[in-house]
Image (tube, rainbow, N blue to C red):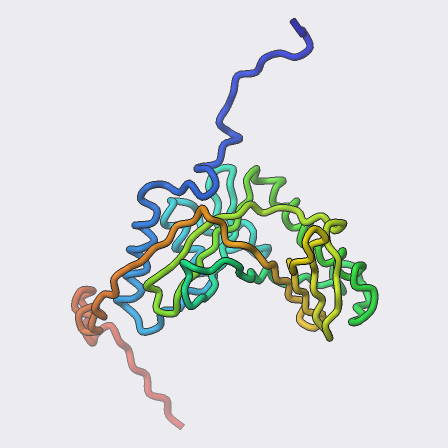
Length: 248
């Protein structure tokens, strides 16, 4: 018996609320309900990132707190999520997508003299270092850091939802090439493109394969709720409106 290695009681502090892509049973119905509400109450069917964050947080009962970093907009216990929403003609058949991950500004972060066309691997390593630093910073507070992705059709009648782990990207596994002012990052293992970085706007994009383990949500299009119906439901009358006329 090793007296220097005591057996410790197992605790659940390290466990996430649910395993990756093993969403609660009522999760897809909650997403579907919120989508149908959007379709029934407004003309525009687009769901941008911030709205998707709130929808996802509501669906799992988490806290929604928009973040500057973008990796911990949704939190529950020891787990944090960033959320991405992208448009696709047929979400259920999408296999490769591009996720915009924000600005990786080499000038502000490193006081680096950006030189399009020069030193591609050096530029690329610094770009990844900024992203990796964000991931590491979030992991100081949350053991599990994930990205939840919504792939939506233009009509919102079909959507795909899945999660990925937020990970470090080790610079030595990639090589970089300039294409004008854009810098492309490729996997050394198979030469497939993994990243794009724009030297002008500093925008960083990650290419990702859609996993087999995902949820496909199809909804029936509801009738649009008339404006007068909503106003009647909230008890509206003209006393709610104050008019002030300006005089020259």
